[in-house]
Amino acid sequence: MPSPVEVFASSFEPLRSRTAEWDARLAMIRRAKRFLYSSTYYVGPDTVGHDVLAALGDAAERGVRCTLVVDWFGQWLGASAWGPTETRRVDGWFAEAEARGVQVVWTSPTTWTRRLVGGGHHVKIQLCESGPALFASSNLSHHSFESWGEFSALLDGPVVETFLAALQAVIPDSQPERLDPRPLGDDPLRFEWWWFDPSADPTPFAPLRRGLANPITDGLIRSIDAARRSVSISSFYVKPEANLRAAILGAARRGVVVEVFHSGPDALGGMESSWLAAALDYPALLGAGVAVHEVAGGEHSKLVLVDDSLAIFGSYNLDNAAHDVVTEAMLATEDARVVSAVATVFADLRVDPGSQRIRHPRADWRWKRRAHAVAVRVLRRWL
Image (tube, rainbow, N blue to C red; front, side, top):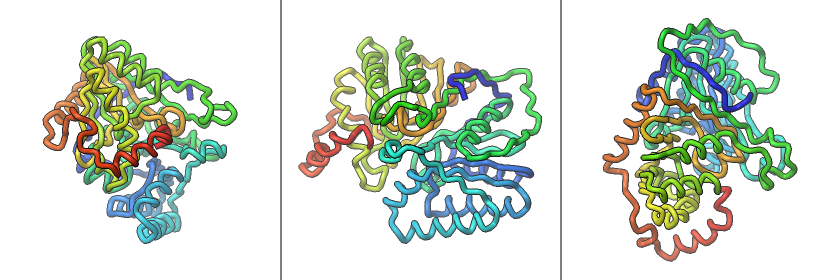
């Protein structure tokens, strides 16, 4: 699938409320009649994971072809954090869903180099044959519905065909599907669809040795380079690849107001390596004039707002993994309806009492954290 490409939607409904997204997910599963696809990085061993798998099983038993795309490495990464008892529990839910007719597709890179660094599929989409599709930053886990900030939206119209093609691209021997008619309407929304699967890079030893350019990274760089007044960024952790990092620093140094909102050290339950990999960039970011904010509990949305006129959202975290390890997708638009929704998220983050601006990045670092940071620095590209 070429990227970027122009796509159109007949409607756009932001789902910033976690309850709203949950209700929309379950309503879609219940209304599906012929087929339903859902993709996630991992399924959590909690009520969210259980209830989605159970709902998919219910749909499969009434004759819906249900396909759940789960990333093998993402699930393993989660399991390494929550332990063997919870892992056995969620494995049982997968087995039960499959027994009831759900097709669970595990994505994994074909090359050992990409498996070594955790390559996989990070795009989060849910759709069925009719009605709007869900394009989200969230996973099927309590983290995404009870603690982390997320950004998800329902979109209808021709863009759903693009979503379906993106999902089928990672499903072996996927069969053709027929979507119900989706008229464009009188006031369509225009987007650029940015999608990239790094496993398509034929470069030997990729991503240890880089080859193909990533059109998502390139699109973000172009957008930030074109900024004249402001750039607002949210990501689980902001630790971008080198050229994107240079674009962010360059914008701040030429007088653009740049602000970053990402997770604090508590987002992963005390596992600080990913946060430390980002925090190592704080001196450079602060020195350039970037306003860095840590959001308590975790900020998992992936948003970029440029000059209050261009909005970009989807699954791409601003980190090296998104650049050259995992498959990602973003939508970019200047449509005022989307820009307004994304601007509202940043307005809420600015006044969120759990959002702390960082001014002295290492003032409270004790010796254990400093020692940990030394070890993280060596492997930070992969954390």
